[in-house]
Structure formats: structure tokens, C-alpha cells
Image 1 (cartoon, one colour):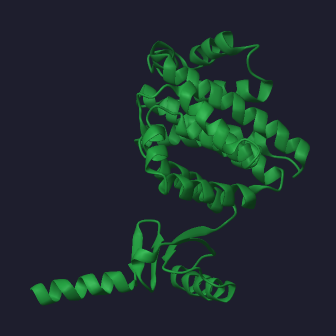
Image 2 (image 1 turned 60 degrees about the vertical axis):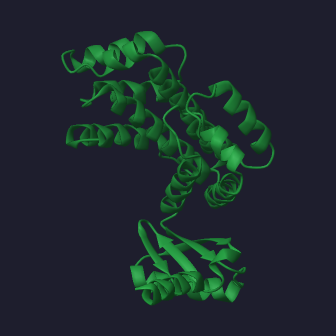
Length: 276
């Protein structure tokens, strides 16, 4: 997004945050989950209807007229809170119609995470997402199917329902189903990791993705968390996966920075020096 769409996103996010305020409770969480479902539905509609997303992002049309169009088309299909957020989105100046779709998807995701927070399930959602991301990473066929843009949305939805139903929280189901059935997702592992990182940040943490040859003990994880917290100057959470190919040591990734202390990396480096 350019500066204009980023400003529009912030205005839209403020409208969502106004609806998300409230005491932490299961009832409030359920209300927010309904809001998330309805915003996801709007995002899917905009994705499938090019003429609609162009009309709702047409800068030559007055903002109130764009909001009025959204109200006429969607009234009766959305709750009052969702309708209010969608009207706010329609009033903004978007640089391109695609930004309108991406913004609505982002708002729906944030509403789902707000629901998890209100229900006291945010940590569990983060863990669910991490575990599912490992499942996708370890199954090449599953990753291929979920990353195939031409695959029917209905088929992907049915597959994800079989994999997730009864095994993860309702919030995790919504997040994964809506993210991985989007036609512009081509790397499902990265998409699930993005959702997990968003959940961690909502809890006030950054995530360190750690690869180790063997499982870490609780004491080792605690020490590594402390070291990384001091190094980066913020609260850290660990997501650890075991990969015997690293041989020993650790590979740590925080955002785009990689600290590769594995024996495999040292052997490879030694081999390059000898070859040189």
C-alpha cells in the first residue's frame, strides 16, 4: 500500500477498534467473532466482484455516496457494527481497488484476534497456528494443494474443515480457513506463520523461530528467551521445531534476521573455505 492507502487503513482500523472495545468476556468475544465472520464475507464478496470493489474505491465518487452504495447492497446481510466498519472503509481514499480488499481482510483478521483476546484464548490461538504451520511445512502435498491458486475455494474449505474441526479453537478455524482459501495466497506456510506472528504481537511479544537438532528443555528455552529478550530489547516468545539436519546448535530467525549457529552451517562454511 502507498501512503494514501496506509492512511485509509488507519482510519478504517480506528473504526474497528471502536467496535472492539469492551470487557474481556466470552459473550463479547462471540460478538467480535461474528464481526470477523461478516468482514471476511465482505472481503470474499469484494474479491469475487471486480465491479463492486471498483465502485467502492472510485475516487471520483463522493465518500458518502460510496458508503451509501455499500449500505444499500449489504444492509440486512450484516450486523450494525459490521455495516458501520464497511461504510467507514468505503469512505476512504484507496489507491487501487485491490487495497480495499486487502484492508477488509486485514480488519477481519484483527477482529478475529480481538475475539480471541476477549475470550481469553489468544495464547492458544498462537499455539494452534504454530502447530498447523508445522503440519503444512511437513506435508508437501498439503502445501501444494493449499497453495494452488486455481484450486476451487470450496475444495480447500472442505479439506481445512476436515483437518481443523474439533482440533483447534473457533478463532483459529476462521483465521486459517479464510487466509488459506484466499486466491492470492501461494505460500500457505508463510501465511500461517504471518497469522501466528500477528497473534504473538497482539500479546505484546515478538516471535523467535528456533530450529534445533533435538528438543530443548524448559530450562534451555527459558535461557534462550532471556538472551534474545536482552538482545532485541523486547519480550520474546519461542516457536521451536526439531530438525536433525542442523546436526547441533541452533538456527534462530526473528523477523528477517537469521542467526545460524548450527553445526551444519559451520561445516558448510569450512567446506567453502577449504574449496577456496
